[in-house]
Length: 202
View 1: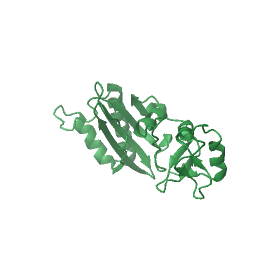
View 2: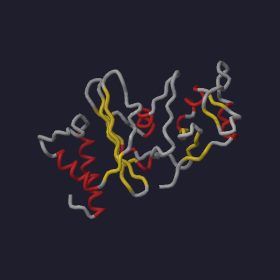
View 3: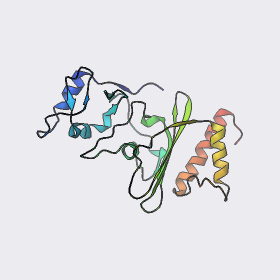
View 4: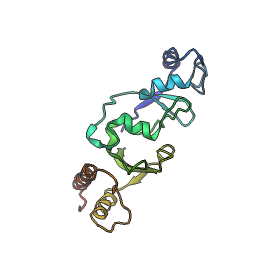
């Protein structure tokens, strides 16, 4: 899958800086390597849909189509924006930008955010460079999914075994147990499709 971000140029940063607030005058800790333009939190918050942050703290600009495959999202996630913002929430006093290798909308195969009461349980499956990756996240009532984005590479046989475990009433993993039934059914269908494509016995 091709990279969906590019480094922000000074022209990009100048355009974004014009939307800054009078209180902070565009000052902040995110900039181009030249340091010519800095961005305040209010600017970042206005443009979250097109921004990411690289490991060296350089601002990255999203490129390409960002239309989400709506059928991939379940539970509290209505769309890609909900999904991204829960993993990397941004508030007035704190901004969390996704890493530049955060999967674009078209890479998301399955994403569900379930749980009971104020507790949350999240699972994501995405594809990158013809490989599959999963992310698990959970939290109690006092926290969220922030700082839990940690993709792990998985295989189709592994996913098939997860589905088999789901069908076991005594499954100790309780995988997707607190997620809506539609999400569970969609995951089973997805893994079945992947198994057929990869020639794996379901």
